[in-house]
Amino acid sequence: MGAIERTTLPGGIRVVTERVPGALSVTTAFWVGVGARDEPAEVAGASHFLEHLLFKGTDARTARQIAEAVEAVGGEMNAVTGREYTSYYTRLPASELDLGLDILSDVLWAPAFRPKEVDAERQVILEELHTAEDTPEDKVHMLLAEALFPDHPLGREVLGTIDTIAGMDREDIRRFHAAHYRPANVVVAAAGELDHDRVVDGVARRFSGVDGGAPPVRSAPADELCPSAVRRRPLEQTHLAVGMRSLPRADEDRYALAVLDQVLGGGPASRLFQEIREERGLAYSVYSHAVGYSDTGALTVYAATGPSRAGEVLALVEAELARLLDHGITAEELRVATGYLVGATMLGLEDSAARMHRIGRAELLHGEVLPVEDVLDRFRAVTLADVARVAERVLAGPRAIAAVGPVAPDELLATS
Image 1 (cartoon, rainbow, N blue to C red):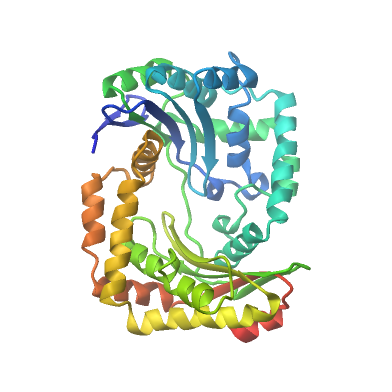
Image 2: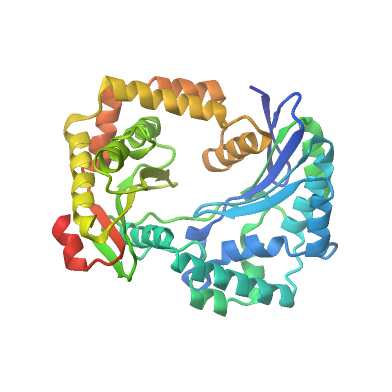
């Protein structure tokens, strides 16, 4: 694996790089430690609104000029908003490192927030909200988040709401940017054929703005869940999601949780896929997914099936959760799941973008970047007892069920 180096600049920006000798690309990103859970309720969606606006132009560049500069070298740029971070990146030919630093530094530190562009992006986000509302799989996951984290920012839609986006003005967005886009809350990550000192110097020379800043202060959600959330719609399928609170992202049991998740619904060999799809033909799409936040987490199971079979699918999901809790997993399941996680981690690092994502996210969220071999060794070290312990910690707690489609709340509760 490549050499990972880290430097903290005087203003507080952390720069972490991984040199990949022979790589033809370099991927650079600015990671900001603020996301949807850090927004006051009245400006819910501000992080995502900013994600849209920063590439719309600066005092020195228009949105078209930014796009043309990247396309002229065959590159790409994008951004992503999560519940606890926002990331902006470029992936360019290795010779174009300076172009990436130019564009990202400009958009992050000197966005124009032109009123016309704010209004145009507002309409784009409103359309995005309508799209999410019209997508049953997205909607059921959002309903489940609301049920798992009621009256808490983790339960909100990352995009915001129709009302908050429509009501957010230019000054609201500018204030949010000024409060959180501060150097001590930013990690710059780059991977590819690069020189660490050159990246550090490039970031330092291009920095403009106030020093300092700090990560947002966060409050953990209360313990209570909502047992069910239902949105009746005249669809061909009923979309189901079952969820439970899980582990924070820094918990030492997170590697064992990844194994448990893989056995439960992580792929074609998983219990849910084999039982619900392969053996019974009840669903085309069925999977599980674990996510960790700074102070909590969630484990989710999703399936879509015919309305008359929703109760049967829910019963099968509950049966597998109970079996995992009571009996754990087998040695063969441990071997397959661990092998998958080790192999997928290695295969996922074949390009500069994946390597950048790994080191940037780790530095921002964990404050350190573990060598890849250390990560692989932690997966390999998971035992049957570790998985049984995680099952007790996660699966023994209360659950929430969400559904979108032709289903009534009493029908849902009757099967849980």
